Length: 199
Image (cartoon, rainbow, N blue to C red; front, side, top):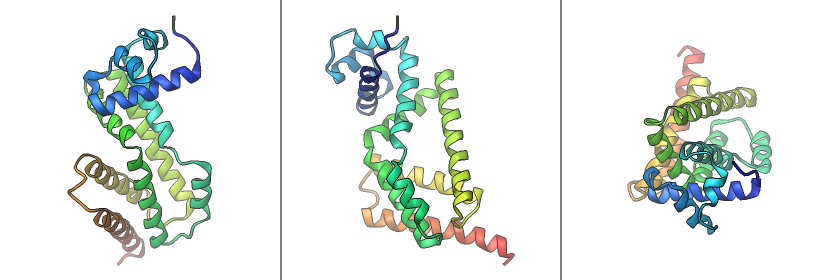
């Protein structure tokens, strides 16, 4: 029987994220989650039907925790619609995601594990596709420069920059990373603006 204490379940899923980031997918066991959450042995197995269920819920929780808060969304909606402001928004985004280091590393582990677990791959594919679609729709409604292709290119570019920052943080300095984000926005948006103007 799977238990329904939502607060305990969230604490266990958060513990699973920490285990994934530190130990990788092979280290994600019910026993490891119990130890990380400092709960009695056997607790996690009462809340999750299987390891697959735990993987899937950990992935969903990472995305939930990566969402911006209401104040951030309101600030973004009130911001100017020029390339400089767009670059600043993207630098903030990279900073926010990179600050949840264990979550992003856990997500990388989940992506690797998804190559072996079809259900996890389906869940992550649906989630990432919904995220991309949501980002494109938000971008188009916001009036920021760039089209849907520019948004997708920025997603791909910034994701790899975040991977670099979290896994090999000495490759680029913080200043270089900020310059790269700005350059990515400027170049991708400039290409789209030239395409629109026909030059």
